[in-house]
Image (cartoon, rainbow, N blue to C red; front, side):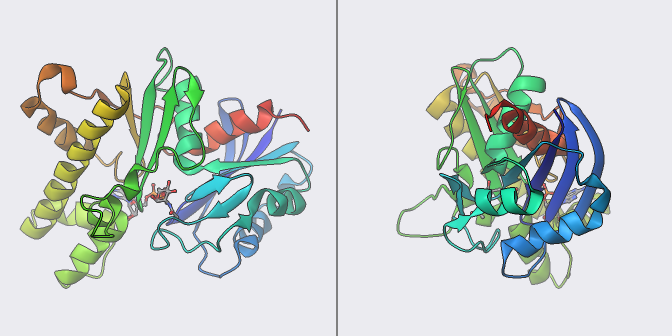
Length: 281
Ligand code: ADP
Ligand code: BMX
């Protein structure tokens, strides 16, 4: 069955028609800044009027926490989502079909577990290094949903509300660039580093070191067979290797195994399509 699959991140929204692993007609827009999430979906659907009638289900993989069909931000700096927004009802109404929704990294974890780099494992963790840091955990073949896996919100100190994602990924890299007088995004920081700018090199090195710390702690928490890395920052050339280089300092049995998402930036839409196809309705 064909699924209208939508991935809403802090930076971009992807839409596609997905059937199993086959992804067709991907569209991408910058995440809208209007207040009402209904307008975000409407903006995407307006781009693809000819998709009507070509899918039987709709599934959304979204930044933020989804509990009983309701959607909220944990870190409004990643995306300011109205609290307890009735996401599944809105999707079903706009798309005119049965709907499912899950956190973006959880959906991607499921996509990778079933059809990507997590195949053959029983326990794996997916980490998206993107606008923020998202996590999805599969334990004994079962995807953990709701709040579980929100590693980007881990803090170093309960008395300091700054989460690790605000010290490592997209939004932070852009802030660091601004502090250097460069109005650019994380992508621009990677470009600057390739051009030999020392400040950009330092930003990337510090981010990789902090994320290596996070991965080492995840390994102790869940002992996943693999930690699968996705997101545009996670998949930027050389970045995973910089994280993994820190593991050499750990005792061997504590070292995580990092692998790149096989479905790349499509892990979320493939994963949510798998889940949408399996529901009744
Ligand atoms: P989202 O968070 O919306 O799911 P992404 O996974 O694309 O989206 O992550 C967005 C972040 O990745 C932004 O901070 C953006 O600047 C950065 N980015 C996009 N492309 C690249 C690239 N080629 N190299 C490094 N960073 C990138
Ligand atoms: C944040 C949190 C997670 C999300 C992660 C990655 C919000 C709005 N989002 O930790 O739910 O999985 O960001 O999101 O609180 P992305 O936009 O970087 O993919």
